[in-house]
Image (cartoon, rainbow, N blue to C red; front, side, top):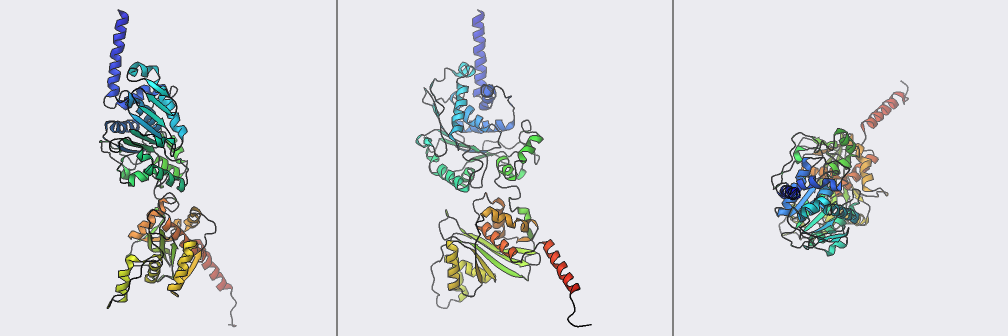
Length: 523
């Protein structure tokens, strides 16, 4: 009798627990309930970020979201929730044991680790007691877990053998290493776009879930956010930034209201946040704030630029120099050319013009129409100009004294064509970077910016340059940056840009020379 009562009581308890784990916020309760099976020596620390991640994964499970991007700081339990608890919950409390998962990360050892942790949950006495009759495991490998309902979870890596498997849900967890070259990042994005996205069982109803920290403006997150396939974006920076707060389609919004408020105070008290910031400004901005740009800018910060508020140029200019980082192509997936013009005046140098364009070296030549003036012909031809014609006309319009061209194969061709077609228009110099990479070239002119010698007007082209240089070297483009750093270093090394201390020393030297100079004739 007592045994029957105990069994009945236990079955009632099971029903209550199963009802809770299958009901509203079921995944969240599932994580809390089975946490100790995976982390027996670590206390569960509750927080609204766990609830937010779980709530969006439940929306994926219901089919309300089929494309989900989650950018969260390190230490948010993202892999445990997304790659361990979520698939286990989906097969059991979620009522879909036949669901098929394909999991990718930058290294297969990470997805295989999570499969092993998922197996710990599935084989735990607590799970078997609650859900042992839902399915039976038929495959228990760290690469593939399978059940008798034809559900499975396959662990692979970016570019790995998982490209032969199709799933109902693709889980992309950290597709990038924190320190990766731009070439590797671009290769990963290409793989995601051309290969991974085709691994779905149903292109309309199957889901892709990506959870990661930002590493670059054009990383996988950047691809998803800027692509045609619209992703629901769960963005959780460690410290609250009101101007970046998001709300999602399922009714979730960041619960914080105070600027700088930590997202999870129980896990990250002030001393822990300070240690995160001590990793450096790029790490803090990208990994913790989900911005591949230091707030305000990186090497060339936004607040380094001095703003020229007047609608008139600070005439007269002492010197005007143009700078070109050349490339020949009309294909927008290739590198464009970057161009900038700088005027030197008594307070430094001001950006007079800038552009980024995909141009062939020459455009088609249009014949002048009867009665057409030279200016009318120029305006009609402008839309089809190539690189040489565009640069030459800008140098003419802005009365450039000297044109700098980076000394590479395309640069030599531009220089030769400028000399052939526009002799005497302005001086032209080929500039050899002398083995310095782009970052080193930016760093060597950083003092000119930080000392307040570089100005920008309130114009669209100036904002284009400021935006690009702020995210450098983690941005999509660096062509205007290369052009600008080339120009500023040339002006600096040729004496056109002097720092305040240098000007004062020069004035003192001239004054001293004047005082000590012997008169030419006796008084």
